[in-house]
Length: 416
Image: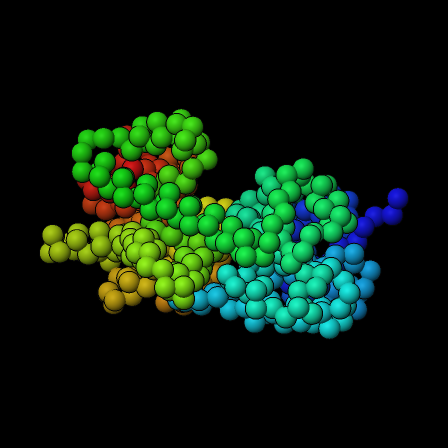
């Protein structure tokens, strides 16, 4: 039996993860991107994203990567797989996605096209009948750091079309999961957003409740354990307190649903509460810094270390990360030298910020240390302890990653 060939248009994080998944499932895979520079880098195994096993899988013989759109001719299905970019206000820019879609429709008007790129509510309703023909929409639910894993083994696949989804697409999906949900465009557009709104609500509630527990002698870790053991909440719930909503995708969907409710004259204040409280949490590290300076006028804070720059562990993305927010606020203090370290980040656009190659080789000691990600074990190492000026260093440790018994600092600030 001949292998089925599938194509992907747009080789951002979304496209690369799904290409890898289809290669693992023994499809022939053609990846197309308009950028020759990106294609050349990918063909040299140079990736700008950090996903476990992705680099290795993309070297499979059944994958070809090109910037020649004519090579997609052999594809049975073509996926539009460019991530929707957002600006600093989390407003979506669909131009690249639409350019790919229009190009494929022009070259291959009869081919089946499946959007993986997330489109805002109402997009498919406003699409012309000609462009709706043979066009479908798959709800993707990838997570940075687990993109390949979730692409290969999805809990379910949600697919939408103007009419019924053809059997050849359903047979392709059966290679991944028997749980295929067929629906219409309007429903699929909302499913993805609603998933993220539920995640946001969990995160926000956990942050609110952790503030309450912080005002008492309660242990948030014990509270969290008890919550996860309740089947109605579950062990995979987003209830770990954090520093606001980051990464771009959740914020994008919050903006999209807020705009959608406004257009439909629905007054739902909870979306604004989510946004406002996320901003408060994201500014909390700097608020603590300012409070320490205000309380103790004699504090001599000259050297600051920010440990962890990405918006979460095991990713390269710094989109809307609390660390970048903190860094921008610390710029207001001209007499402070800010150093940063993150194992996944080697370069920053801000040349006034010193980025360390490693903590082990650095001989500097710091007056204020911000631990901005929940790293494990690493802070028990002696080379981290050497960065502390004994009892003088103020340590902001929101995720309680430090071994308290080994820290002499008089001031250790946590949120859990």
